[in-house]
Length: 565
Image (cartoon, rainbow, N blue to C red):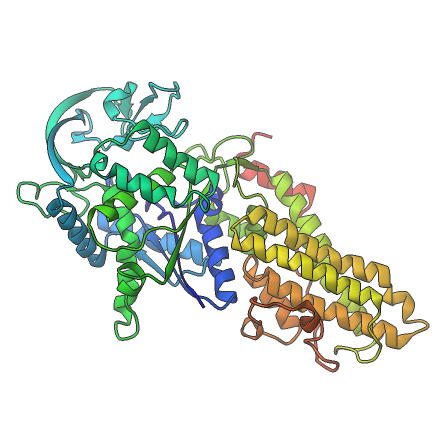
């Protein structure tokens, strides 16, 4: 058994996540955590809301709320959305917690003591009309490198280059749209990344065989361009006040304390039951922990460069990321998700339209792993109708109804195994081994293709053996075939559980089982599992597993969620 620490990018508190956020980090991390638990590993899966910075101040101002109350409201809203999406966090915390403050202060003090913190007077953009210094991401303009017209002052999401707000062409305030901006001097603290560049580069080289291209390429691009000092303080009120004399009126930059939030949230989890849990067993001198992290490509630089450098600079043995799964973007009907323009379906609305498992399967079947992928309602309906309803749902319904009507509501007895079952066993074992390999490697699209192929093998088997015909002349042989098919339903439920936990539970329930009855996926033997449900074991036919999505429903959804098509 291994200790697996699973984290994903912490979602900003403002607004609600859309499907792109779900598939970019949250959903794959959940599926991986579930799968690792099913293999018998000790898994700690933590997440939380990223709550500091101008994002929260501006959001609260727009909604005329106190910032703390604003964050409380959205934290609860995020938590509900993720629960509705069946995300299985061991703990869902907050970066604004006292635990995160404590650890942030400690890490900063270590960096300062080790000579990696510099004081500098800098020129920063001040919005006259807003009456405030603007955080880098709240200044927008044209990128000087690629010409993208909506680049932010901290980074261009189009070419991923890190920017200073003063580099933008035709800058304006993202808060008010005002162009009345001026540059003023202010004193700040910087993390001296150049001093850590050599150590960081050596550390990243150890990850080359293990990180996917999206993450490794971005990290190498930053190193090749040369690291620059990064400001870690801001002229704001909402955040952790800087624990250094002369800087008490400033707070830590959200991108300094937010990644530390992984550790702080783990401490929140541990503090709930201190007699049973230790956050240090996962984060400090924890040599037996494998840390796997999931995030969209726009967050990769901070988690492959800035945060690892921060931990290295302390001189302490913090748990670093072992595998960073970077994702590209999911587009919506050929464009971007936009709450303000009412384009795109957001997670809390998605689960009101269809059960979460529909979305979970579609998103992972179309995960933007190597390049961007696009969501359309036509594609969504096609996959639900063909894969879920037509392949998996049809097999389950067909087998249970046939057995119930022809033989009875229990696993039938009688009949010998033939070459058809031997061939099925061999093919299934190969496909299941491939499915596990892809899941281990976090190649989710390939894993979903293999999962579907496993379901197809069940349909192929029943089509070849034709129990509805055989039963007319050889009832014992028909019983043997249907006994195999019912055991296939159990196998399909077990293999589908990381992706579609609710549907898997319903399938098991039809067989008088629960998720607690599922075996470990380690050493999964198809021969044994095809004989797991003995003759006489009861089942119920129950309701169909999936709803077919009609063309009329697709058109209705397009109209409702701002499709251009």
